[in-house]
Image 1 (tube, rainbow, N blue to C red):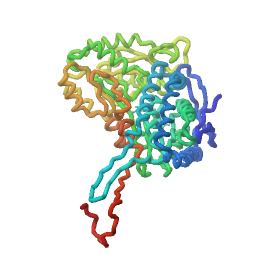
Image 2: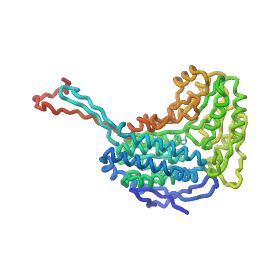
Image 3: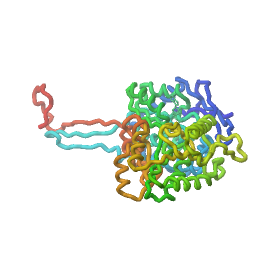
Image 4: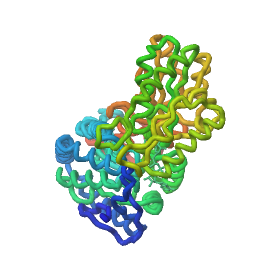
Length: 496
Ligand code: NAD
């Protein structure tokens, strides 16, 4: 049985802790490895490596740092299928989806290749007589990235290209459920010429996370995961004096107005609801059907969803398994609870079996119609292939529903009415909005982040937000001409 260890100071190590957790192939149910769970000493070893490397990396010229980023981009682009296969083996998502994940991460690497432009400071000449002021952005130091299971490559790539490009060093703590993608990326960094210690991976659970949050050498924390842990990480990290961005869970609504193209809306609902088996923070979880279109829309969604092939990720299937048996069973329980509370099960994936893979964590696409806001299937983030349909009489009712929800990650509206779309983007209390686009994940040069309980902190991921998060500003006031002493003057300096 392979032991999946850490990557510290440019070397694969297993650490001192003997604790491990099983890593499973969700399509077969087979335990394929044991991941090391770092203790405090192992975590400190990674932090120490990042702290030592920081002194040199921050002083490495921007040109050299960018050259490493370009090489990393080239290598990743050449070998993205290899990384996608690593993801499918531990996460279960189908090959095309895994490749899509890598590609979206690659876009952030490409954005980071242009970081010299974004790191430029500003200069004001003669702010006071013969006094100039300029500002520069400097790296913050060693930073921690704590990632969720559902995007083992893309989510770390939301952060580390910009962190590294800006001159920081990194300790990445991947999810213990799919830890291998991070090690693959670490080796690629080494091949791209990144000095040892700039990018480290520590495998583990709460013990490693708590040390990253408490250790004074770590200056910033980027976290992505469920809302309760995001809140905890934000509170503990900021209490320790660090800057923290903590992205949490989601419950994304897609509003369909009566004038929408219902075929387009049905395609979108199915793709966004069942892609990656619903295990995406930008998955559509609730369709809000406005007015009298609900029956027709649900029919179109059900027709399409029933043709989805669920199966092993490498087999050409449309949708893979869920991440663990426990999670699969929890999602099935939400469906049971919704049915018991009066929702109509229009499509039922609970009894799905996949030929040749009897022990996979399977759950087929499921549609629950006539869901109401007090049902647990509506209030909780399900994170599975379950699409709930809520029927609303008016646009106002639909928006009020979204705005009352504790999450605010993504949302979408389907309509042919430009005025309604304009009103929606203005009124809705959600960080990322799609108009006739179901998964509005912004490009790398925009920022990614939700509102309300979907993000704690004030910086979104990537875009200029990311550059700001991983740098701090220094303003320098200078006087070179006529530096003659004007005599003692203890008053507050005045501009002349
Ligand atoms: P999770 O919160 O269980 O785990 C995330 C990370 O936190 C992992 O590295 C895990 O090891 C660590 N962790 C877990 N419990 C901890 C504890 N008690 N103390 C300290 N650290 C702990 O999330 P997950 O199940 O891996 O991922 C799914 C969740 O992530 C969903 O809620 C999803 O919406 C969310 N997510 C959000 C976004 C976003 O952009 N907002 C993106 C992807 C995933």
